[in-house]
Image 1 (cartoon, rainbow, N blue to C red):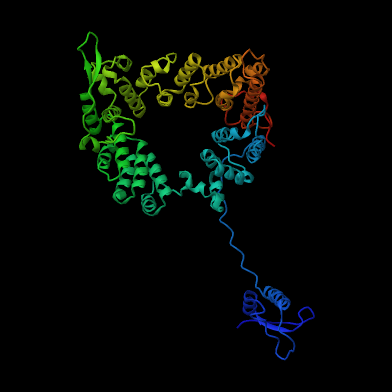
Image 2: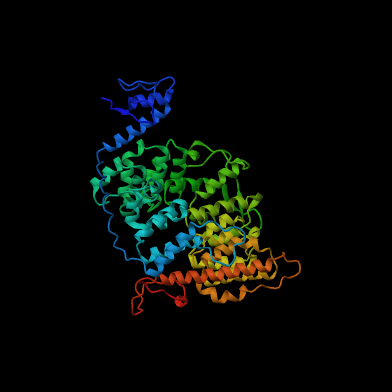
Length: 570
């Protein structure tokens, strides 16, 4: 039954009696159209707006006074334990400083000589993860905020935050990305429990199923393939593509039958991925079919005085080729026949060319002349095959000597493709090749190549970068064109190089014809480089736990010089 409130007093003039519903109706329609009725027995005119507001105020106070206390919300499940050791005190303070600087407004204009702390966060997180520390509980919100803003930080943040980070992320919708970002966000069962695996595969969310398939694949490749086969025909095309990609890990001959069936999939992307995986298996039937097609197009030519390579590109792309992953329609600007030839050569096992050309090595094959202008297409396809098959011998042959100009090299002039070839080589050899390239050609074309080199850069590579920057400075070159390389050097040079670089921080005399003010900018850039390297050395030293006697605990400095100082943990 509606509650009626009576209000009397000098402020309203006329005593009124009204329910809350009547007050709302009068307020919406106006007291002129829907006046409040006076109290029974009261005299006077109809109540006006003042009486309406006064009555509503009294009604509100009365309703609030009659409320019953609400039942308190239940407490969340306690955060799981994290057995990893805590950060040393100095490293904890450093992390707080890095995260605080991340949220500071950009300064704009010249960067000055101070290190860019924001760019050091990924490196700090990687080092802390390598030492096996757990994140401080009080900094977990700031860490998750940083990962929310920068996707490149997410893998490191989730590793460092550990189970407590995921527990906290589940309580805040803004951090739900952490539950989807990686397999750590998925609630995986023990892969040794077949029933739990089967249930999660049948009922789990897509991210959970992807993580589960990867975990099972890492433990038992055959079991993962069998699990995938149970629901393959009912999966969506985009899901089949993601699941199929998980077979790259541990790819072997036992996967061939499943992949051959996927060649008939109704999704073109699935068919293409299945063909790519099969071509990475040199003994597969698809690899043999591709080799038969490619070697019928590319043959030794002995008609002249010296042996060369003759090429006769395919004249059609038949249904069998399309089933094996050859895309019939070329991109804009490409000829059909060269497009089909490139796909055939790319999918052919590289060993087939040694057999076809009488046992010649990769080095010998890439130097053979190619008739009718097909050299560029053939070598580019060989480059893609070397990357796909992870073949370092062919990668070395196609890269050639680092001193050779890219346009005259045996493989491709594309720096993007060269960087992919470099990635197949062992890290020390990769660094030496790039160092030689920089020494011969400078830094202007080396930026992409530097991106595939291991960090910190090996001594020869680091010295070649610094020497090239020094040469550019002495020549009065425009300094801002080297800002990308300088930023890489700040993150990738070995911190032990800082003292050797200190001599470059002075402002040089500007040669005739130099860009105005270039000397000052170069000096600032080298000062920032040196201060950043020293800061990185200090950060690494802070992550090395020390006891009260100064004895070092677990972990290492990763090649940095701890002599720059270490704060003892509190």
